[in-house]
Image 1 (cartoon, rainbow over the protein chains, first blue to last red):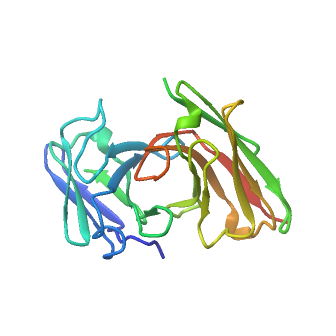
Image 2: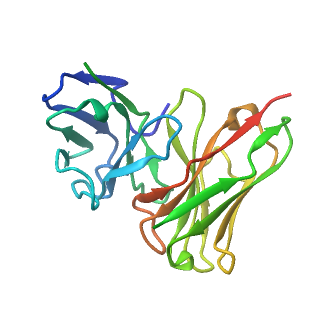
Image 3: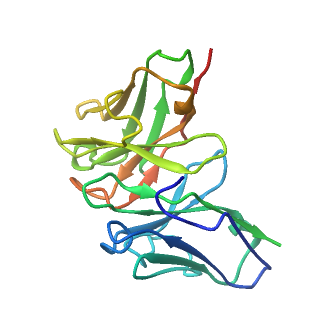
Length: 110
Length: 121
């Protein structure tokens, strides 16, 4: 069982928006703004998409956005494209521990 | 350009040992904390160990504490993971990842392609 809870799968049609949730506790997601999101295509290196809840690294499309409320963080992808199909993972700093990850969400673009 | 290249994976019997290496280039290696993150077959990502920049401190997931040792050679820009007393549940792709800062890891901004470790008799 993963430390953070994500839905196993989400889907959407091209052009639509989807949101992936990431639920933790007051010791991790709820403790600080150190939540990050990663895109992972099997066989490739994971890619940082969002850091510090809502910041995008240089080169990441502004179709990706992040937010947080209490112990739950969210990743929203707007204007879905076929290339967005991948696995997405959230991660959070945790008090007195190493960073923790969610179980991952498989995004299918219909 | 930041590059991280893992090596040293392979097939090992339960109870055996293996040492992974990660060669870094394109950045000032000693100034960054580094981490090992693994993905078991059909499972999600799990951070197993982190090491601070410089001659920094180390930390481990409970699942590997006492069996795995992370270390770094800043002169060679290389990160290591010594894995002892390996178990079947350690079977995974192991990724080397650069952490966000010198001491505290708040996110992982660069990743390698991974090295497969299979523990089986």
